[in-house]
Every structure is written in C-alpha cells, then in structure tokens.
Image 1 (cartoon, rainbow, N blue to C red):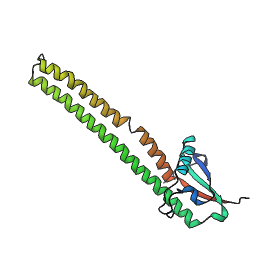
Image 2 (image 1 turned 135 degrees about the horizontal axis):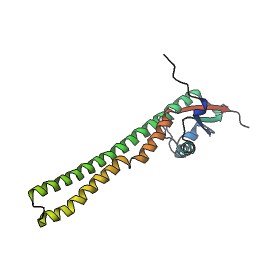
Image 3 (image 1 turned 180 degrees about the vertical axis):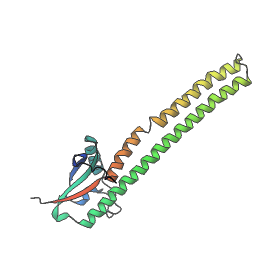
Image 4 (image 1 turned 30 degrees about the horizontal axis):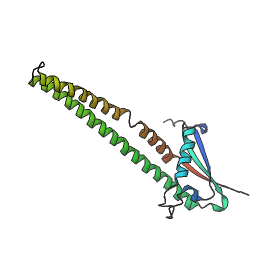
Length: 184
C-alpha cells in the first residue's frame, strides 16, 4: 500500500498575531472564564482579514505571547474554544444556506403550481374566452417569476454564506500555535 503524498510546507499559510496576554483573544466585556467566554470581535475580524489576504491552502495561526504569560493548560483550552467557536459558526452558516434553499424550493413549487393551474384552466375554459385570457395574463408571469426566483435562491443567494462557511471550516481545522517570546 502506497502512502499518500505529504503536504509540502509551502502549502501551509501562516497568520501571526502578537498577544500581550490571552485576554486579547476574548471579549473585554465578558468576565467568564476562557472555557465559556466570547471571542473578541476585533480578534475575529483581524484573523479573517489576514486570511482573506491569501486564501490558498491550509493555514495555521501563530500567537506570539510573552514567555512569562504562557500557560499550557490555558493554551489547550483556548485552542478548544477557538475550534468550538468556528464549528458553531459552520453550523450557523449551514442553517442559513438550508433556509435560503428551502425558500427557493417553495418559490419553485409555487411557480410550478401556478403554471400547472394555468394549464388546467386552459382545459376547463376555452382558450379564446375572456376569463382564460385574463387568468393567463396573471398566472403565466407569476408562475415564471416563482420558478426563476426560486432557482436564484437555490443557486445564487447562498453563495456568500457558502463562502463564509468555507472560511469558518478552515479556521475550525487550523493549527493554533502559541510561541513564547522575550520582550524588553
């Protein structure tokens, strides 16, 4: 059995963030312990911005922190919290995508039902009758509108949510490394 090719080091992108303390990762307004504390919006914006600069390949997030501030148990907990946060964000984006697509399928179904009703009206009424002509004027555009709007919701609208989900998945799987450094 052949081993799969190893990923080359140049395939891994690096995001480096300098911390004064672990608190820089978490919200200043949340006094709870790291195990349940909210992540800082500034921190999340910064790592997303840095990720968007170079989206290729896998990446790792490196935190530089003064050596005197390092605590291996806290670092393990923080890694876990980061992964949990991004897993939650992936789940939320999945819900957004599913919701948009559900609405799209409803639009498609409603549009198809209106077009089908137009066909039944043709069989029940004469094509040249005034009532059929009036119904047809309203039903055909409404049916096609529903169909095309639904297709747009299924195919195009979830695009941004899908892109956000991809980013969150990468952060969920990213390698988080803490590096101690001596500062003067």
